[in-house]
Length: 99
Image (cartoon, rainbow, N blue to C red; front, side, top):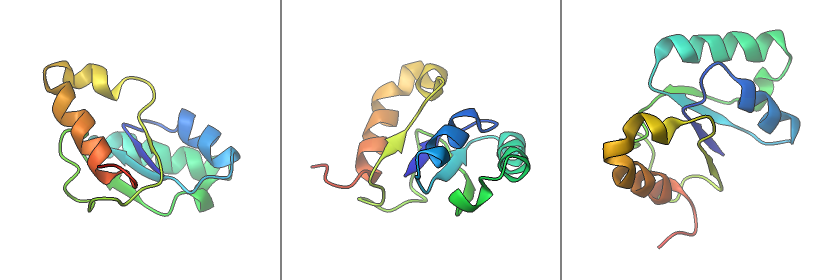
C-alpha cells in the first residue's frame, strides 16, 4: 500500500499493525526521516520497504496500477486544495483496478 503524506508515522504504525506493507511517501525529507526513526524505535520498520520523497500531485515516480491501496490520512489533500483534482487523479492512477 502507498501512504502518501505519511508525516512522522502515526498512521504508518497503525497500518503496519494491521499487517500491511506500507510504502511511505511524503514531500518532506525531514518527515521521512522522522517516520523512519519512529518506525525503528517502535519496531515496525520491517513493514516499510521504502521511504520515498513524493508529492501527492506528482506520483510519476510510481507506475500505473502499482498499489492495492492508497492511504492519505491527516490532510495531504488539504495542502493542495487548488490542485485536489490532480492529486486525486494521481492517487487513482497508481491504484490497481482503476479505469
